[in-house]
Length: 98
Image (cartoon, rainbow, N blue to C red; front, top):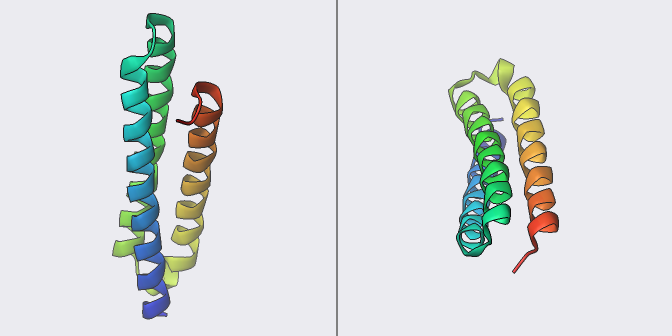
């Protein structure tokens, strides 16, 4: 189970790296936006950052967990990732994806 767990952890780390890149991209776009849009960008980016932090926390819990808790913590990490993914998609839809 350790190999499967390690592979899953690496997969989640890669996903978080992708989220970081997406958030950076949206931040850059927000800096170019008009005043009204900037406020919306900043609100959405703050939400994305909070969700990213929750996903990172779940990943850390997974790293520290014993094998008996792995499935439960993995489920929580997946849910956090799915929430972050949906929020990033809504941000791309709302603000456009350059």
